Image 1 (tube, rainbow, N blue to C red):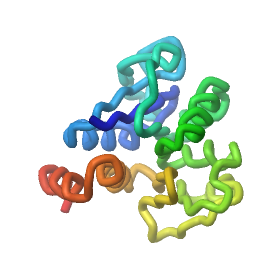
Image 2 (image 1 turned 60 degrees about the vertical axis):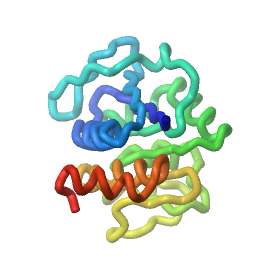
Image 3 (image 1 turned 90 degrees about the vertical axis):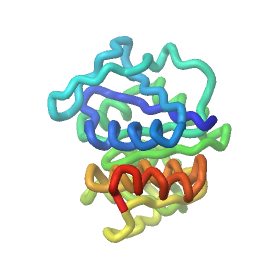
Image 4 (image 1 turned 90 degrees about the horizontal axis):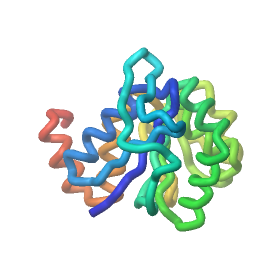
Length: 183
């Protein structure tokens, strides 16, 4: 069974986190949400509290993918965490998927990890994808090797389905899309 770890930071964009988590769980992927602080209750950017499954310091083992939801404050909190940076480097070294949506791809960009990679992000933040080849406005989800990036809340379903496709299959992603009346 595939596994994805989702890092929740205070101020994360709720739909960008929850829609992909919901889709991946429907597909049978084990999804673990982890607060980056010691508190499991994490407040989203629009005042919606979410109870994480665990905390970053209690995570065990690794998963097939690490997922960073966006949101302005959430992304800033991800960037400010040494533990988050260490986990990203671990996933990179183990050649696991590094996924992010909205402002969160800038975490990878500012770490210098997107050099020469195709990537996308929230409009206006492209300059923070240091060294990346921005894929343009028409690309909802960019995949380059083990990096998967997406534009924002409006692309959250496409993003979740792409992760399902990469971890399981296109057929499974299509089945889930049909079940939720997406396509």
